[in-house]
Length: 89
Image 1 (cartoon, helix red, strand yellow):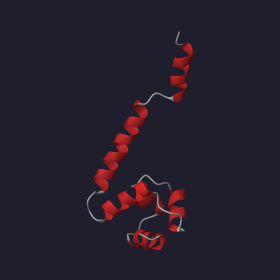
Image 2: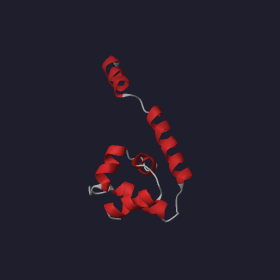
Image 3: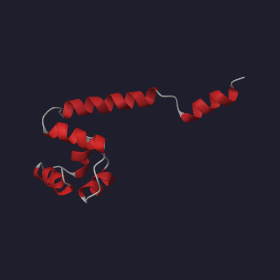
Image 4: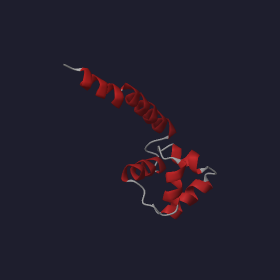
């Protein structure tokens, strides 16, 4: 989809950039850039297309975001990983 089409779609839904793009994991700054013509990252373009085609919905996107956050929390921090390497014999 073209950036103008995405902007028009968002406005027709009466949603802010944060509301519309946030469901796809895009912050407002990047949303603004996309709507001004910056290419949509391929992964985001796929999510938007699936969403607009009704293949995935808000619940699916929310579940994916929750799982992503959990996965990030489960990953050891860089500082902890570095400390473990330094203290290893």
